[in-house]
Length: 309
Image (cartoon, rainbow, N blue to C red; front, side):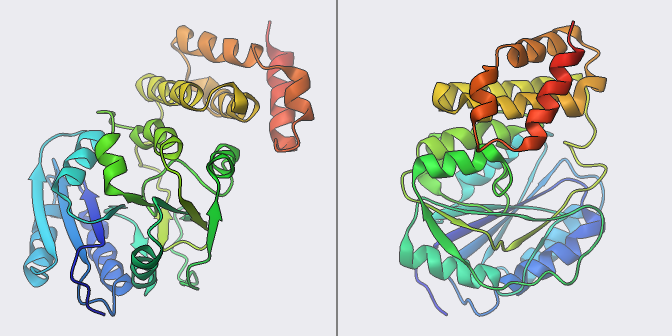
């Protein structure tokens, strides 16, 4: 398949990913099989001190027609993502982390769909793996479903099918230029995702995803500390600001989840008090009567409320 213009920019970011990069790059090529053009691969090593740059350099030299390599020393994923967007020329942008996989043939189908349908967003449910390499996951084709903006926001807030990742998602480049990432070293995606949803009109969702995301123990969001909790709080407050009162009950689930998961890490009392105040402000009647809220969150809410002084 030969395409004149660049439909898709694939921004692959890596920080000390030498142990995983060969497999990641191999699966990326496999996902693009059949395409002779229409895409570019932007490789970015950020402050790597292992063999990451060497591996990316070798790949870039083998695929010079479609690939550009950059070395930066930001030490900040928000800045890295913005840098990648500014280097890109495709109609759409997707992000790839240097330790994840893509499914064979998947980006071939995705690119063809983007060229033919021209949505502002193509969002997918990630295939998520927790430390195990599930070789049984295979691409079964895109299953596009057109969503209204309220439907997309609700699906995102329910957090079951769609999460605040830019990996495995396909975003019009103009949206990311107009709404850049903040210079967060973690949760930069969670902070920006609501604004991207709020400013997109033609949104397509697919339950089948081209992306295999490995949730590793040493990932940025797995090792929580006071600073990361502060960034997560800021991202959830931005969610409130962008979506407003209409979605207050669903946003409340996110406050409940933060407290449920990280209360033990909240040695900084202002963090704990801020989240407790958010939970105390939940309208109990509205919350319990909202059928979109899972029973598990209602149970967590009761448990937290009963434990509050």
